Length: 285
Image 1 (tube, rainbow, N blue to C red):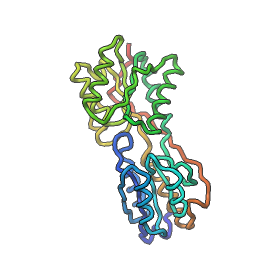
Image 2: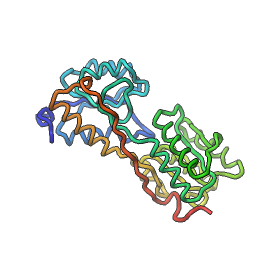
Image 3: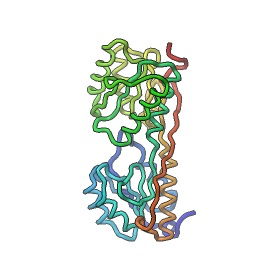
């Protein structure tokens, strides 16, 4: 049901960092979900910085709802500012807040990738993730390790590379791995861009996907869907996350309930594994 405010075309403010890599597609999903609720959506793309988000919030009308994707360094000051508003959060937690928040179950994402490669009987696997790892990326790596450990395998430290978003950095990591014996037979790349660069580097090295190397990615945006061979990927439920966040914001607006007036536990939504061609059609030897 649409709130009275939304039905009247009241503005809602989406305050979000400019997201890419592992988080690409979230702002677009949120805008679409808010529009379906009947809101006029004003998007405020600010730097991934809590101080700038706080300044943005203070400049917005207090009587208009906010959907916040918190900055990575968000803390008590931002939580206190949001508590005075009708607001919800999505994509990232806001420490110290009572905000209704929707998150991806990132541990499960990593576990799905690891379990799939175990099921394909790969013994030598590697993990390629973003440098300056976010808590979400750290949870995916933890889940990936645990899936291997639950099946009698370990992920050595030298098989983990957290690299800058740069094709040369990805190629250097892969060349280092494939200069060792035994070389990896499977790779989990934790963003679409990392998967694309990994595919290019492997091709340059003469390694074929999936014949020589199985590749699992994370995310299913336009870049991931354009890769060939078609990418097996762990896909976060961004549309459902956005739908639930937008519907709850409409409900909070209808009752004029501010974020600080209730305590909510974060809702974590499970990702799913989409199996395509990049892991091959048979188990590794």
